[in-house]
Image (cartoon, rainbow, N blue to C red; front, side, top):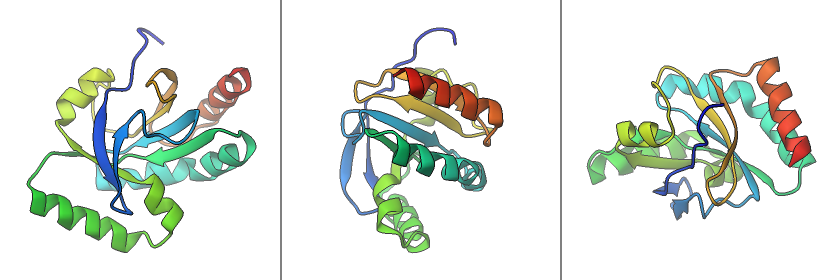
Length: 154
């Protein structure tokens, strides 16, 4: 996998308007994190969601999150986008697990060694930010197999 990546400390608010600092505010002992950079990436996130829900049921201490990652804009811009996402996501559980990050995307990607924003990244991290698994792009059987194998070992 190359060098061990550590999830950087970042702040965001979930769609219930709760402020969180990650990785320490992740709820799980292990956290399956989906990082979309573009609106259309939601399709790639959704391709993993059935698996994410199944794994969350199966493994106690595993929680999954969506972290839409956007370039830091002004306050008005954040409110506009967050309220727009809230309106589109009525489910409170989904609102809780969707944490929007407004930050310098280039710095964030560099910290996690993400080469580009063409696809989503899927990470398995603990609350210390240690990374155990990484995939990129839509769901794949290879990705699922690798993720299940790692979860079985942890």
